Amino acid sequence: MEIHKKSTSFPIFFVLLLASMFSLNAVAVSPPTVSGNQASGDYVVNYNYGASYPILATWLEERLDSGPWTVVTDSAQMGTISFSGKVNGTYQYRVGQLEDSYYNYQIPFLVSWSSAVTVVVTGGAPSDMAYSVQLTYSYEARKGDINADGLQDLYIKRTSGGASNNGVIFETILTQQADNTFSVLSANASQKATAASWSTINVDIKSADLNIDGFVDLVIKDLSTHIPNAANQLIFSSGSSSNGQASVATPLGSQMRKTMTNISGSFSVPNYFDQFMIQIPVTYQVLVCGYYYDYFYEGLVYGCWYDFYTTTVTAYDGNFMSQEGLNFGFAWADLAQADTDAEFRTTAELLYDVVGTVLGIDFGKDRPDFNNQNAVEEALAKIWAILSDLCGEAGVTECISQGSQTVDEEVLHSVTGLQNCTDQLLSGQAPLPSTGTAPEAEKTKLIWCPSCEE
Image 1 (cartoon, helix red, strand yellow):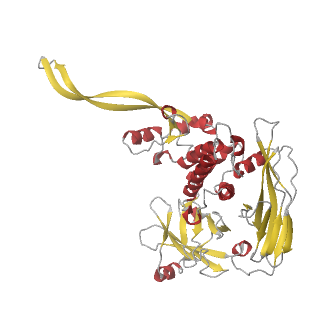
Image 2 (cartoon, one colour; image 1 turned 90 degrees about the horizontal axis):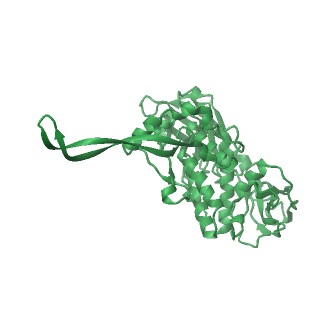
Image 3 (spheres, helix red, strand yellow; image 1 turned 60 degrees about the vertical axis):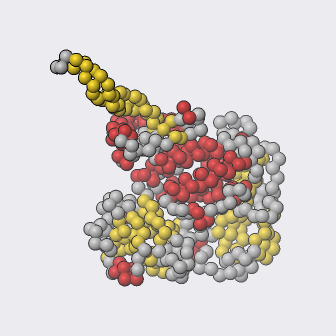
């Protein structure tokens, strides 16, 4: 789907959101058809790629077993896509459709899907990496102190399923930091043997491919029951056949909930961020030197002194806002306003990087070619799938609804910590990044500092 005008610049993941919020009549979508030797994993999927008004775009989606729906891109002519060498598993295909809801100004686009068709591959390449198989892997958790720093560390071991070197987490040690986060230890055999002797802990370990890279990751919950002040954790697989350790651990604490609340709220509430704008009086001092009359000496004396001034800073309340949430919200606004393909792709790449920052991972290994429109659409669909899963895991109760509470509901709490933020602002410790697309003089800045954390 090439972007020729503003009305077609909306990415797939956003219109998915709109469709889940509103139930409006849409043009029926015809399901795809499948031909070829389905059982062997070599087949062709055909679908109607017509785009006559009010239809703006159509695309094909695929799901393996009970995994997430992903947008299929291919170098062949859209509408007919050939598959070969598919591994054993149950595949589903459906057609997504974007149309102009010309009768509804507030909701300019609708998205709908066809019914799904199923392909069962039984004679293809066997693989213990099928999503359904990875979800059957079992894990255990143990705790101890691997580095004798007085902090409880975490040991995760796969107890059944798959090869130890298949890129999915097999055995890893996470060391607790002073701020109660965890860091992946590049553990040697002796350290792994020591950790394997620790006492097991009863935590909830869930498998899910959170970054949509083909390797299931882990969500560790109820960790604070055994390690005080420890947040739930996202533990990402390395995806490397030579490394059975995790690549990174990202906390699912208050910061993640804040970020996901901001992102979901920016989708569902018009001008969502405006409710968190505040005015903060900031006092600062200026060193002044010159002559002044000294009544003791009864004459002019040269000296220096401080003059104090007060100004007002417009900011976003750090008690309700995260930097990543704000970055995503403004990048999304820029995406919706993109007038050219180049602007759209550049902003989509920025969104992709913001989501990587939210997850705490580097997307570089599987980075799509953002000069390719099909790859851009696939990346945006991937972003939506990631955010949808992450929203629920972060404990945001209304992922695609009315966002978070307003400042008015918690006005006293929203003021708490602002003086600390101001102090860090004046001492140069708190960054004030420009945000938005307004002219430089009109840009609003965000006060952001650790003391704003709940």
